[in-house]
Amino acid sequence: MKDSASEKIDEVLVQVMHRYRDFFLGPGINMDEYSVPLRVRPDFTAPLVTVMGYTFGLKELTVDNDHYIEVSGNVYSSGFSLDRFRERIKEELSKKIAPGIMKNFATEKDYAHLENGDFYEYAQYFEFSPEEDIQIATKKKKEESKVTKKMEDVILQQRFKIKKKHLNDLLKSPEKFASAVYLYCLRLFVSAYRKSL
Image 1 (cartoon, rainbow, N blue to C red):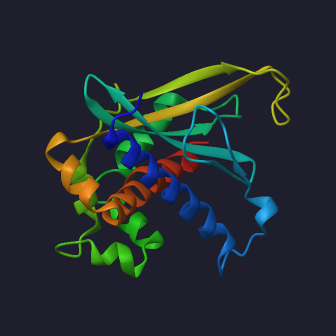
Image 2 (image 1 turned 120 degrees about the vertical axis):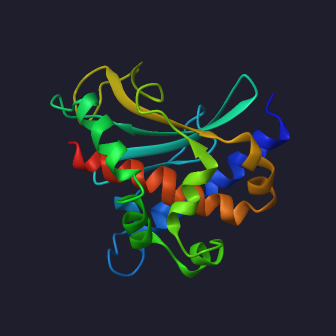
């Protein structure tokens, strides 16, 4: 049974995944809806989004009363290196690089949530350890993967712990919470993931 905080976080994650998909359908990229499918899976409240063959997901996890946002992506390349990804995500999440990436995907609404106009403000809501919060998981499949032809999925998972002192503020402002998750957690993960392939 999910507590009310988890339910509110799930609502935010659904918004974020729709926003992620809508980015590819909008002007500029202009992909059609069939090229960016939403997939529903029982273990994810928010829909999964597949873009150019890669599937990304967001879920809320509660461990010892701490709330986490887990971002995940399927790994198809046998040459994928977890160590290379760890190095890349450290760079992407750094104060030097992260704001530039976030700015690329920001809208007026995202700017409105900032107190001093610095996108790195979104980093303050989360804790993250590249050594402890990134892992590769394998999941058995009922039928072989269309991409890898294997009977299992290999999934890169990264967890962001929501700092307790910010949780209530974020839950009171779901739009701000959605901006933080979209720009800081999802977009930086996808950026690091793509650069480490």
